[in-house]
Length: 179
Ligand SMILES: *[C@@H]1O[C@H](CO)[C@@H](O)[C@H](O)[C@H]1NC(C)=O
Ligand SMILES: *[C@@H]1O[C@H](CO)[C@@H](O)[C@H](O)[C@H]1NC(C)=O
Image (tube, rainbow, N blue to C red; front, top):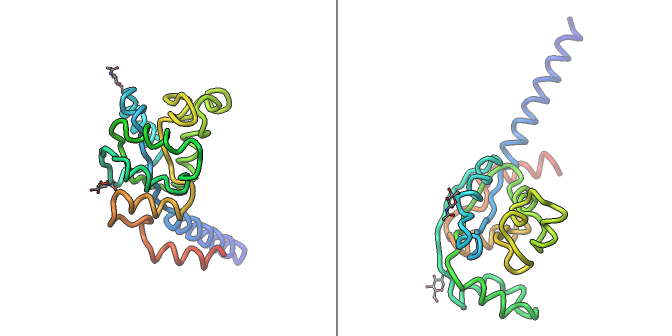
């Protein structure tokens, strides 16, 4: 009898820990469909993959970036030789920006889009989004934030007021449970 109640208690503890763990881990990231993705008619297909992969689309917006916007968005690359070409490409047509949310959104979205260079993605990650619709390391069809800091910056860049996580308090709690 005692063994059974200890066992049930253990189950209950595990259940509550894992369910709160899942709820607490929910995060948001910035997903973007770049001009080649829009012009190539990949928007619906990509959104379908996003939803089928368990993300919810919290917010979305079609925008035409100007040179100032693109320069600011990619400011960390401003010294790189590819920068002028990148800015030109990113301003050549509209982009669709989305705030997407799920457990582990940041790394899961990066995994889904695949390697930066779409030519390599076609070989090493043939099921990735970049393999589907990208054509080079510049024209790689989609963007995803690479870290929680980038996600917060990039979400606020486009959406200002949208919180980068679902519940701030939960996110703090999570740290104390899983140091
Ligand atoms: C665009 O893609 C959709 C599927 O997402 C397809 O049904 C449609 O025929 C495509 N349109 C063109 C012009 O290729
Ligand atoms: C892009 O820049 C224009 C001014 O050039 C500004 O009005 C607009 O808010 C900017 N958009 C974004 C998404 O930063």
